Length: 305
Image (cartoon, rainbow, N blue to C red; front, top):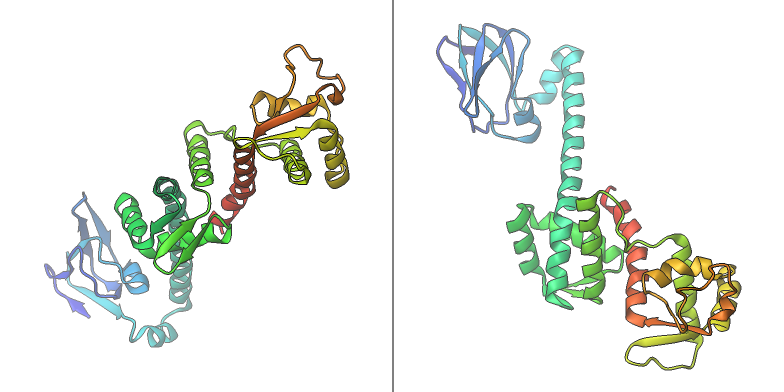
């Protein structure tokens, strides 16, 4: 292809799916957002991403001198690669791989950025949300496609956080969704783990508490459970192979997830746990906390895969 001095090769915003290799001559490219011109001399590649991805030209390019260009488009790509030196194929392969990685990183970044808004919307809507409305609202907030939002919803569905049924989303526990939203926001704002995230010891103790409550014949009173300390210690030892102590229970007591039947303000942390007859707490609050701690680490793993 011959391009005479002063002629334009392409205009900013053009989409022609074409790569040009400058064989001789000089061209100049100008971007509306960056007035500093770019120069293209012999050996330069123009329009790599237009060929690989179909993206619009980022510059208006004009011939400064008479130029000769090699034109490569999707129709003649394979034939051209067979005739041109091996370095051209290597460069295009490298750039194609880099483009794929960039797209994948952008996809992951979009999911991470959109997740808090999606969780907030779901927590505000209760148990049932219209699928298309959620997609529309997330798109307005983050300009991501419905496909990306569906991908994020499917990630949550794989973690049993919600169910996608035809044209609606069903959430079993909006409270857990709200906890997850607050936990993610806390980490983003404070750059550290939220207090909602329990240690492994705390999780094991609360799991033992829930098992002891389920084994007990004592009914819940206004959503509050009561568990006998000796029964709790027996369940923990049998099912989780751990021995409970007042010291290991302290973090949960301080956070009011477990409330002792007698005050521990002056209690020696090394005192026997049996000195407290029983513990009580909010049944749903403890269940929600355990569910949050099941979901949170798995969600991090799913978002980066």
